[in-house]
Image (cartoon, rainbow, N blue to C red; front, top):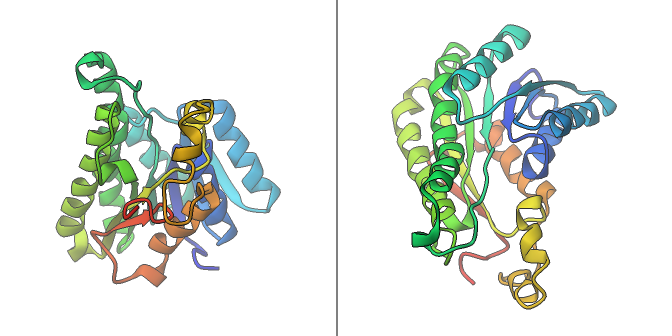
Length: 250
């Protein structure tokens, strides 16, 4: 078991990539704290982990709220006596409209969750990781954090920011044996692409717009997250790992 005895937090752990990673961590021996703004799906992930004999706890958390993130970290360290891994995964997209038609309120909400949420996770987790002698932080960026796409300006900008924030944190905290990396998923079969699936004209194109000519699964992304969380990635930090079927090069 690659994470035996480790404690991990997964934000946005109620579904999609977050749920897949939380379950994968648990299978590898980690104690998992599932954080999500939706209590129903968060508790469901915890139940799935319990069903396979794993240890898990749900904490209702809005990652854009500083106090809630602080309390998430505090509760985790009280419950499991430390923290070793943080997967900053919670995120949302924005309405597909031209930049000038996107409301300021929606811009703020997307950036608050996707980028500020990662910042807050790092801010409050790093002191605990230092106490533990080091650890791993993995941040969810996106293929669209590496290249632009029409009509998703807030999402593009927030996910690009995650990559530079990842590099910044890696440089600052490497001396404490804390590794900070990002993943950049392409089109993955989660709720965030439900609207695309309903578009009979665009979906056949979008679903094959990479070298492998298919969309990915949450489990495939979770495998990459597990690698970065584990000691197998002990000399990797400040990196962004594309998990996109070759979408960036397509």
